[in-house]
Image 1 (cartoon, rainbow, N blue to C red):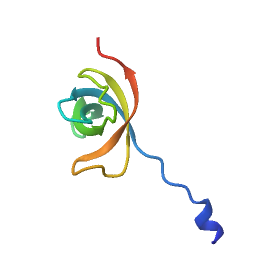
Image 2: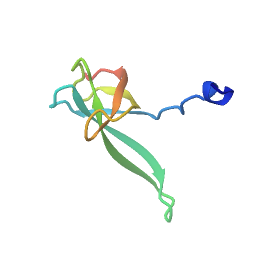
Image 3: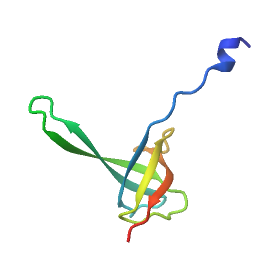
Image 4: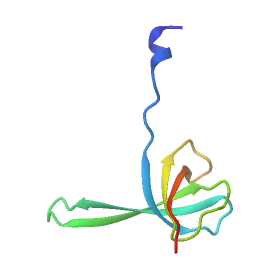
Length: 91
């Protein structure tokens, strides 16, 4: 085994924070992540929303929970994210 292959590390995975939009599926929730970007032409701040299918093994999440999710290997056709931690429970 060469020195280069044993010391190489995997790239850090993406982490996002968002709100649970739906928990109707079994062991899956939909998390909506809002990002703020500048419009290229008008320089106005624009909010963009993206929905991620997230694996929730214990089915503990409810709509409105603020969660942190991380990228993972494909778990199903659309599910490529898993739950990292629950930041805040919905009231």
